[in-house]
Image (cartoon, rainbow, N blue to C red):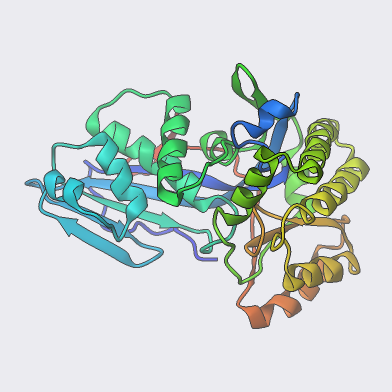
Length: 359
């Protein structure tokens, strides 16, 4: 996993820099897509913010030229001004371009993004980057926007980008950090910090990237359609997933680790039957090998089909678990992702001292 310890380009006093963390979901995923949670009273999604960061930097330019640059993908493009950007049919950096289309800055600038997340990792790198970029552009144009409005805008624009409905849970770790319970109610979405020891989370979980990018949006969309179409098996599975997520919220808050293990296993068993492609032979092999060597439970992050797997481990077994995982994923281009819980969510970094302030 690459890091962003160095600035992406020389710092100047006028630039705006934001960061936002990725996430690993523990329970209740997919239920956060409207209106699925309305059919499962008490629905909640539980996830963990990772110190795997996304970053946006906006540097003013003289004149009206707009430059969009993605450092991690190597894509960049230039526009003579906003009118040219608005008239374009396709973009090299669509995430940035669509947000620029919304905010319509009337001055020139360079917008650079970067992400520590592997491509297609299933840890919401795009959603975290949406939060970081939305916040940076809002400040650049002088628009006052609260953090929940940032979430709504980021979620809606991402849905435009991927062409299918998006859930809301991916944005809250990027906004707040820590361990989150996102309560999904008829009168709105409510975020709650789960009062669990973050040091315990650091010690009890391993995160790995399989080396195979997930199929973004596809698996969730297939399951979503089956639920809306009245597939009884899928509806029953999600009723159980909702129950498990509510129990996971309580188990984490009360540090009942045996229950965390049981609930992760139950959730993964249900989720892998929802649609073809959620698991793969490689994912099954990784989870099996890990559990035979000290892991207590494991599940894929996000929609599945590739990406990352989060593993709940027995205390003292980290080295053994990591060694066997490394042996399996080496030939697939995978890697262990060294992570801890991100203690902070969305942050603005001032230049040149790089001090941070919470939104």
